[in-house]
Image (tube, rainbow, N blue to C red; front, side, top):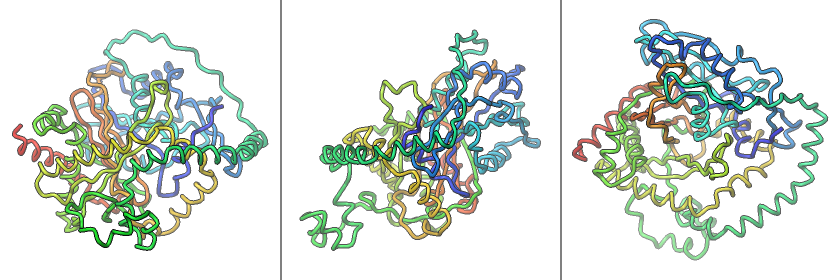
Length: 489
């Protein structure tokens, strides 16, 4: 048995009738007259390589009354026929049809009595292509772990030799409720020690926390009597001139993406040449991630302006960042933190917009680097599971999400992938399109995966909040064209 960390378990506690904790990927294969990527070939591939696919063999065992975080055990009854399924789109099999099917499939929760994943082989795509939608719970895997899992499933060449595989672990008997209750009670006994250790650790890291958190900007969001608790600097707020830029600090405007979400989803996707992004990066002296954020900023600005909803203040994004250490390189759980940055959607000039984004991400990286990578994990491990789960249910059942200011407007995640082709049974993988998750106050997610010279963008949104998600998707392409034009590339 292996216990989930607090960060891993948080993706279970967040689930509700409208919020799901799984993430997905849409892979498109070109079979080239092979059986690769097809239903039976895929089942056989997974059966052969199960020893390398830890998250797909394990199922949850929960502690009664949520006294402690759940555990993983090796499933003694793993049924690949249940997890791997076959479906199709009607002719002509265009991307919009595939996206509609994906939107419906991801709006279904995973069965917690089985290993937390499903794979759908989708036939009928135009040009004879085959797609695979893989759903896997975020409690089991993060973005870097997903890339590692992909490497264990796919091959570097069409006619790859057989791998030398380790033996499968022995399946584990499902523990009784009494056994799990005893584990939970033992954990309660150690809680005071854990709490004391975390308090001491937090006090020791206060200088680093001070560097990572912009206290003055936070104080400006608070009522003046509360802000005075931050010290002399906060007491002089009334005397300070207004900031020149509206992109900094903790100011986050509310948009159509930042309300309570419904149970249904929309999905759209596109792919652009990585060489174009790198050309803009080199011409303007920024990073690849800055250009990706600049594309998202330009698209969101155009989209909201088209609807007459562009706020005066800049939108803010949360960027997940891997904090996986070298000794965690071959693990699958979540080793991730996040940094906040303004998207400069209040800046009209695209070059100046990108300059602000570059300054914002540089500042955010410095702040993130000031914090120890494992501090968030320790704090999350201490969070009482029963309270965390109850809070998520209260949020889901009320309209509280419609009445609070969001800490950020959108999650934008950029995961680097392999820059060479991968194969499944001889079928070449053409695209790897991420399909991420959304939650209350965060009704839009943009995730990017680079692969073999392309950047694949996957957009997921609340179905009611963004009825024209394909428009926003195509605006990403237009934003890149604009950046290429002003950069002279």
